[in-house]
Amino acid sequence: MNLPPQLRTLLVLGRVSNLPTVWSNCLAAWWLGGGGRWERFAVLCAGASLLYTAGMFLNDAFDADFDRRYRAERPIPSGQISPRAVWSMAWACLLVGWLAIVALGTRAGNRAF
Image (tube, rainbow, N blue to C red):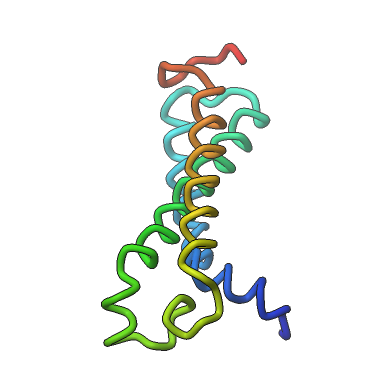
């Protein structure tokens, strides 16, 4: 499959192939918390996905010097994306992901939306 280079860069940077693991963790937490409305589950998955992706972006941003020496094919050292863009997207994903999770309530199993 040929993806646009910018999209491929973001997918590699965010390690999105690991997102099914994040979603299965959300499903387990949602189910153990008593389940509830599927809309809340979707918000939980979206928020957790954004937080995970932000973490992956931050990992590459913090490790840019290491990657320049040992993993030159990674998106930042190879020049596919600027460190500033990665930092900006990471903070945006953290904020939006946190807001999504906070919108679910402050207590596990809280069913009021």
